[in-house]
Length: 181
Image 1 (cartoon, one colour):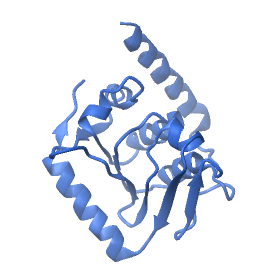
Image 2: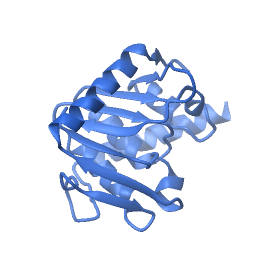
Image 3: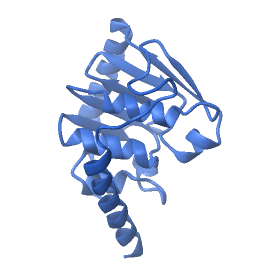
């Protein structure tokens, strides 16, 4: 019960933030999305802000495959975008039920979320924006990745590389399970 109240409070806060901050963002190099061939290293650089700006830059679609997610501003951008364009989020089954996971919040907000269905864990960490831009690397969408761990992000627009990630995402999505918790 207490967890549901906390999640609901967080959701209400995110909705309020959507109304006032949907048009503002920042990245380590100023406002706007990261450069097409950029690299980010945390915790020294603001990879969380860069990722949020990348998601916010989407005009057509966003596909997210991530093992763990508890970064408020990233979930905020996913939810904002999910109200405007198609957004699909693929997560690890066990991790999505973790104590700090924001997956239940995304589901309550109506985001399309599935868990990977495979042997082992769904350990991907990538985002495809508009079917033509990619962020990948070791960076989970967590406070630990943003502020403690040594992590990396690589931003690419190479059509052949993005296409391979799109095919992998579509396969994992079609094999995935709809999350209802």
